[in-house]
Length: 474
Image (cartoon, rainbow, N blue to C red; front, side, top):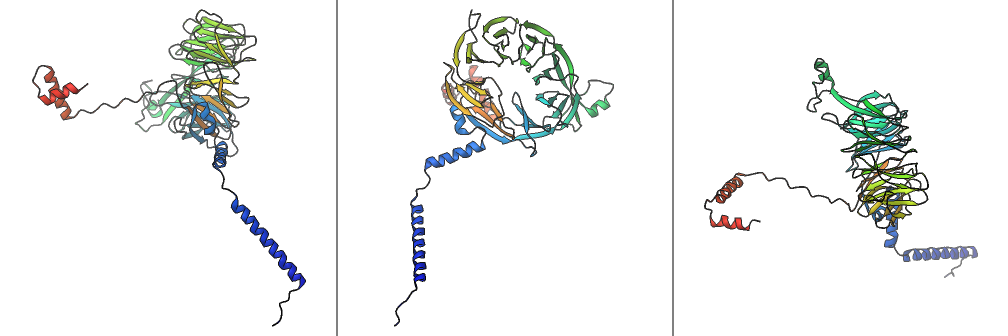
């Protein structure tokens, strides 16, 4: 039997292979002993994904007393950017740089339709839902036209050239869209509709036709200038429609005015010595206006007289928010200042507290005031007792942030890439009323019972079972 022989190079190769195998086995052993990701790591991963997908993630808005109702994506061309948002009561509209208007359903985020203004050169100021006859229309106000869209599907109804160049977004007042122009006028544009076939058939009976949704004729709707009013200086903020009073405007000429909503006639005018460039806020018949005259004015809408004026050391250019018993205003070098809406005989107003919260108050919920600061893209929750900041969140991608109402408002956030999100208060100030039960349909048995009970109440004898039921009925 020959002895086993191995050369030196072969032995060296064998030793090297053995060392490599031991190293691989050691690595596998180390990897197999590593623990699985912890629940905290999994939570951090979920949070990171939410931050990437949502404009405002659920964990960032819950401390603010808000909840996510929906998030959607506005369809657009790959090269287009969303450049505007319009909230008209409960209606949500967005538009891109090519003049494509998108209507989004408020309660679900569903994209209802898209319509084109036919020109990417026109600047869109606002889109307003205006009732006319039986069917409403969405009216886009641009710097050259009014464009009416069918409210149900976005079909282009008509374009009407403007005689006045708008300087503000439009406000809806009945069948009118009201805006301020670049020369100090306040313009009423009226939506008028007709049915083209009926118009052709009834030329001799002007006005003796109506749009009827049950008929298949083509509808025509135009938004045309009805009348206007003059203001001192330029109107730079959207008019404020106040039900039961009229339309409030402010101007760079230092004028606060109330106009009749139906005919544009001035009801009263209040004059100051410096421009007004911020939108008024109205609460309980009082208009609160901040001006460059360094004052916050509380104007009685009935008389046009000042109830009180708070004077500041610097001009005021931010918009106040008046809700319930408080008015909030962002004041330079002082922060967010809260005033009482009922200061009694204090003609200089009553300051309740001052807060370090940045930005303007946009709505009030049961948890406090929600503020938004455009410069830092920051949202705060400010409690109402002393102005403390109870929660803060940053939404760097939110380009437009607006609330539908001053109390319990739905907050809409919109990005340039078309992502849109709606936040609702978790707890509301106004109690939510349960729907009333539908009335029961009367049956023959119920009618017979009612007749029997009526006879018993008139002195007719009733059996013992009926009497017992009558006694047990509350």
